[in-house]
Length: 190
Image: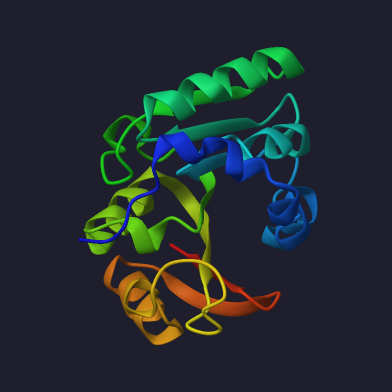
């Protein structure tokens, strides 16, 4: 069974190192997030990407910040209230159980989460069903090497495996991109 992030580590998700490695606004810009989008952040954690996304999508857009940990959902609720962001909804749910979000998102997003999920194919299928017609998915994962940070090599998802998982879930138009020395980015469409 893959390692799963523990809620006690939520504070580490807003570290300076993470801001340097994955600057939220610049990273979201690379995803093509725009005003009016409905952004589905799977494994939203501390809201590291969800809250900046709310500013990008604006009042005409919506952010659904999904996490399995009640502590994360409560943290996002507190942060969105403090920031006055009315377009963020924090949702407590397993990534593979998104039935209530069928056909709503224009962009689904996972950052350093997919490798932690046991049923990757089922989860990607659930995310696909949560996307509206023409919807896209963007996934950030650890490169297979270097192993400076992140999960053990056996838990990482290489590009061929990622492509097979996405194809199997009904995604097409798969494109890979670099994202610094530790991560890579995958885009796909339904």
